[in-house]
Image 1 (spheres, rainbow, N blue to C red):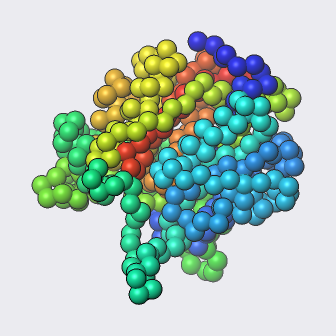
Image 2: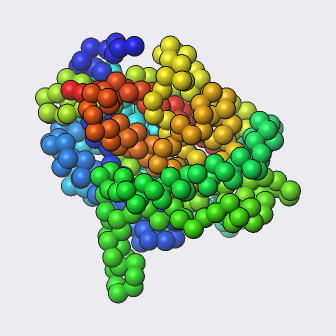
Length: 400
């Protein structure tokens, strides 16, 4: 399967970077969303040599931020000229991937060069409230994702629904979560994440958190089968979803440079991820975790690609139950997904997570020391989304 668009319209990602992903209210709690994202945007321009004034738009996903167009704010914070606009995308957990999808479609429509990705500072997210008739606030913890007649479960309850509907046992969930941590711990030890990570300043002062933040803080080297078994059901009495096989809330940002194949060559890029196709699908809101499988199934069919032929797979591990259900549905062995661990170990920075998937795929495609071996690898990113949706994107690693 080759590329079908002309070179001046074929979207290709030529660089992808992210911040460390750290637990909410932890090492990055002092940074607001635009302060997380701006260093990534600046680093991408420095790495690729793209002139800041040549950026057509900055397209950024965000889920629970303060509004006000964080894409524009971060672009200006990063030093981009005032002539470069910004657009913020909200598809909740899918926002970061959907921002990249949107930018790829703009390139395919004849657009220029884009910075695209996602960001989330759960630590600094504003308190939210409806206004009562008397004008007093009625605070709420999350937005409504679907009409009540469809069912609008909390995320953990939805994960239990998926586990029950698709027969995903507690044992499988725990085993998968433990594998995610072990892979992430090994990747950290090998320095795998270093090249893709932009360090951020720690909190000011003399506390331990004052040092530069350079690494993800989620992977747990001492996690064991025995410890996993001790976690009680977290959301439903006698359920199978626990704190151990669920992700944790995190702060972080990730973004890419995406342009046409023709422009990438003019920039002197060595290689990148060509965007072959993207799909978003809707599913029953009560089973929202299966949304990624619906999107990926449609995408692979449209591209005439068998799941077995995909070389690299990144799935947002919000919960082990939904990850396993989606991989089972697609016929993808769980050992083939998330080679260096996923959100179960690294954390889920809502609006950024979909962009983190693409950053990971870019890094993995480049890790093969034999350039010829990396050439042509198919890479799949997919994420399930609140309200009963999923987004998937298929890429091919190419040399330029």
